[in-house]
Image 1: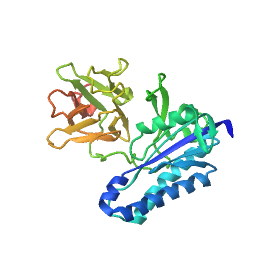
Image 2 (image 1 turned 30 degrees about the vertical axis):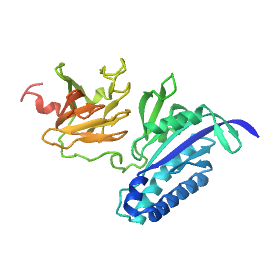
Image 3 (image 1 turned 135 degrees about the vertical axis):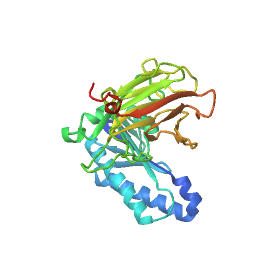
Image 4 (image 1 turned 180 degrees about the horizontal axis):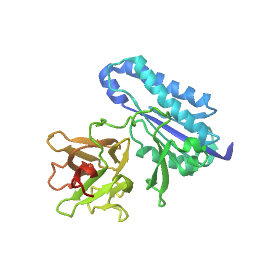
Length: 312
């Protein structure tokens, strides 16, 4: 029996389970993952959704409308935090990635197919740690107060699709939320950082203020920094400003690599986010230690600190 209908498709994926198996052993890790997937499934049902199938460390679910799915995603994030606290495993926490799209789907023999399914599945590849990504169609169904919780990522190119997709990211659900959990650190001691200086190799440096965010880095000619390198993705990374800090968000296939001035350690980002502070270099698609890598130099500073005393 087949049937076509408009639905919001949600994919949720747990990452970090491999580390759990290595740390806790098969039995305990399997129990934690199984319990977590079961809890996420109950959250779907409690929000009038239907679990189509579980996918190892994740699940696929259908909702009649976007607001139900968004509410479920928020409760899933809360549940993950709670279950990991109660488990007290001492291991690295599981991280939940959620993506959703709305459109016509066809249900066949207990499974679901359609463009919305494909979009949600591929959008999941762009989600960072504990992030919720939604398409324009889901966003338009939300109440005005809930739309304010989301930040536009503009248009992303999804694998297998010729047309870009307008995507939004859940920034905060509660008014007292801290900065997103994908951040490696919160350098709140950086005073009034409102500008970032960027330069590629020997090219002239450019200065961007918070009003000029985001800065898009990639191989696409439409990027703020267009870099002709085979290891650089068309939409490789974005620099955004929120919470008083500049954030580098990797959206690439080969990753971004950050090394701060004075540090030997390199922070590797794969679909993750890092707060940029002070100065340093960003290797695009390869470590800055690789002499052939495309390297972007950066410096975060306050515009007021560079103005002459008594002048402007």
